[in-house]
Length: 66
Image 1 (cartoon, rainbow, N blue to C red):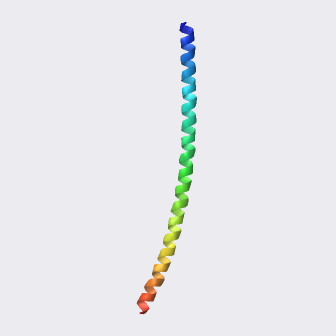
Image 2 (cartoon, rainbow, N blue to C red):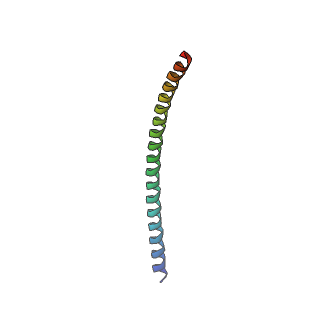
Image 3 (cartoon, one colour):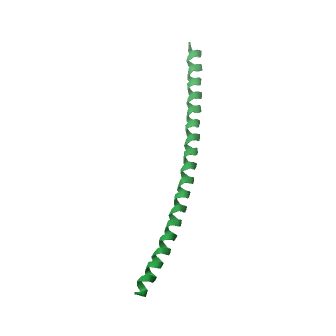
């Protein structure tokens, strides 16, 4: 009977490790996706800020002319 319990315990440990590594792997993939999304968003924000700076400069020029 002890042999059955030992084999069952070893199988449970192996399955637990497999599930843990799968979870860890998928988590890393999600982190990579989030990093890419953050980079895209940061690039969009920089682009929008450049547009805002240009428009505010034009507005300031118009206000200075008056």
